Length: 394
Image (cartoon, rainbow, N blue to C red; front, side):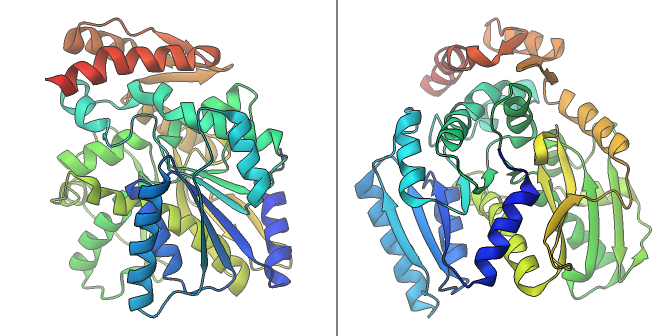
C-alpha cells in the first residue's frame, strides 16, 4: 500500500493535467447524502462522484433530489454515477466496483446496522462508545481488503469510529484508511463560537484552534461540557497571537443544543468534505492547510494534521508545532481508554475492564475482554444479537 504522500503526489499530477477526479462514496445513508450535496455544491466540472449503496431504487431517488436541489441553486457541474451492484459483505464485489471506477478518493460512510446511532444505546448506559468497534470495522475491513486486491491508490477516508478502527486495521497488517472523519471537527466550531463571542471576533475562520483528543471527549464535552478530569491538549490563536481563556468555561460553553436524529450527520459529512476539499484546495491554490482527523496514518485517537501544497511536491504530516507526538499519543490513549478501549496491538482490540463490567451490569452479557482480528464478525454479531436487538425491541 502506498503512503499518504505518495497518493497525494499521484492526485497532484492529475490535478495539474486537469484530469477528471473520481470520488467514491460508499454508503448513501444520511452522511453520504449530505456529503454528495456538499461536493456537488462546489460546482467543479472535474469531479465525478460515484455513490455505492444497497438499494438501487432508494439511491436513485436520493440522488435525484440532491441533483435537483443543486440545479435549483445553479451549481450542478459535476457528474454523478450510481453503483448498486456492490455487496459490502463480499470482498470480490467491492473489488469489482473499485476496478470499474478507479476512484481517486474513497469515503466509507457505510454501517453494518443501518439507521441506528450506536451512541443512543451506549452513552446513557455505559458512557463509552468503544464497545461498537467490531461493528464499525466490519465493512471497513472488507473495503480495505478489496482496496488491496484492486491495487487502488485512492486517498481513503473512514467515517465510523476511526480513532480505533484505522489503528486496528494497521495493527493487523492489513491495508488501512488514510484519514478518519468527525469527532474533533465537531468540537472545534463550538469552541470558535465561545472565543468569537469572548474576543468579539467577526471572522471565525481567523480563529486557529489546535486540538488533540479522541472520540470520547467529543461526546462528553458536547453533551456535558467537561473533560472528565483529563487536561486535553488545546491551543487557540487569533492572527498568530496566542489567546488566553478559561478552559472550564470554554468546555461548558461547548454544551450547546443539537438534534439527536440524523440531522446530526451534517457534521460528519462536513468533516469528510473538509478533508477532501482541504486536499484539493491545498494542491490547487498551493496552500498549507491544517485539518483535524481521527486515526490518521493508523494512530490511535485524533490529531492535527497538515496538507502542504506550498512546495512543488505536495506533502502531508502531523502538526507538531505546538504539541509533540509523544504528548499527543499519550493524551489520546488516556482519552480513548475512557471510551472503553484499553489498547490495540498485534491485530487485537483490548477492552477496558471497566467497560466489560459495565456491559455485564447494564445488559447482563459477557463482553470478551479482547477481540482478535479474525473474530470481528463473530463478536460483532454477538453485540447485535445480545445488545442492539434486545434494546430496540424494548
